[in-house]
Length: 113
Length: 115
Image (cartoon, rainbow over all chains, first blue to last red; front, side, top):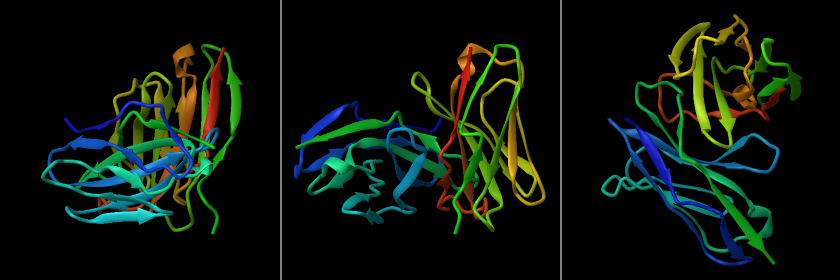
């Protein structure tokens, strides 16, 4: 079946540190890949997406590259801020599968001063 | 433009009761999907509606149902509530349902507590 695996959290970093959150996927066909962020008590916000191999999604300093050869979509940011503290979800949809998102378990990020 | 709007935001129900949650998608969006979020199971897909037709269904019991109206607004209903139905229910909308790379926008969610 289709699945998304994310690194376990929580991830605790100091402000201005480099962030990597690993995400790998298993899918039949050619998925589109997404990163969503959830702040406490809120819904999900799309952070970035990539729809084909080698695409790089980017937004607000976050980046992720769709690597078909390693079935990965790792999230990176060069310098995190306290305001980036949230839960990050990696997800995929499949061609022909409509808008059904398959999510990873989420990775909590805590950024400290 | 307005985002995805869900009502009510918070509600408390008793076991055995039923509940109806409402979702208004972004204007012009015809695809609406629903997700359940719990600490134990994470984010799980419930169902997707497109042009008033159910296109996809997740692995939930028949107590969970939904519908979509001609104006794309959607409702989901849970009957005979169980304690385990306590969760954040998220609605999402998108322009259409044919391209897997569509941007899918989420609402703030409806927090359901079953006591």
